[in-house]
Length: 369
Image (cartoon, rainbow, N blue to C red; front, side):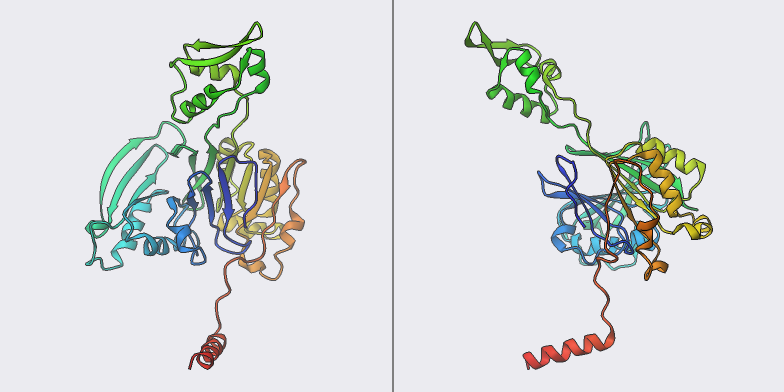
């Protein structure tokens, strides 16, 4: 499922149905590369998609969120690059167990590596699993956490907090990096004329150094165009920039409806543009939700009332509702100005039954004896 949302450079695509393992891909349009949130069943993702992923964000290591890491390894292990992986406490040992389950006697110097970042409440421990060395690992660093940010590139940043699911589980907020926007009214008010200087200013902005550098601009003076030297192009941009809050995504799955969890979620995800949130149970099964530390529809309705996202995508409904899944949408109560995004029941292919496989084989044999 993909949906065009008010993002400038990010393209979110949810690769699962309502009852499938959650898989959220954020593609960066200018680069064609992306980051992936959760990694359960991902066999339906094309190899070129998996090879375009630079970073994995694992909420927790239950099978439906983690088993697809083997598929990631399978499609990338002979690629000369490093894949970043972020997960909760214990994720390094679990990655070590995955790698140790295979023989790596045929490794080459060009094989990929996985850099695993284990996120604690007060620090991040980073280890490298080196492909050329048979994916043995060594601790690279332990750095204190001074804020919620765990990952950043030129187009986005990812913040994370730890919640409780009877085990530590990560929740994420993704924010687009500020984009270059100018207000034509402010340019006119300043007596400036658009020209090549705007292109130079934009280039400096995306290079991260728009300020403290002189810039020649065009100015209208007494009916004539003249060049004027601005000593601080950063100050110029602040004067003509157009205020536009960055678009954001909240990714929330598998947490209990406790006061501590909800307080953390509200702090991290207030007013996100898009909220991607689990809704594992219907309201009548609230007791089951409490026992398994999941959310039900009444919990999600309470969250929506507090967070007020512009768009809401419910996902990860329990498979116990496989014949009754449409009721989820009937029970959701959205605040005004919140747009509901619907998922189909399934997006992943249905497994073949034995008689179907036999029939396919016979049909192919008849065509190609």
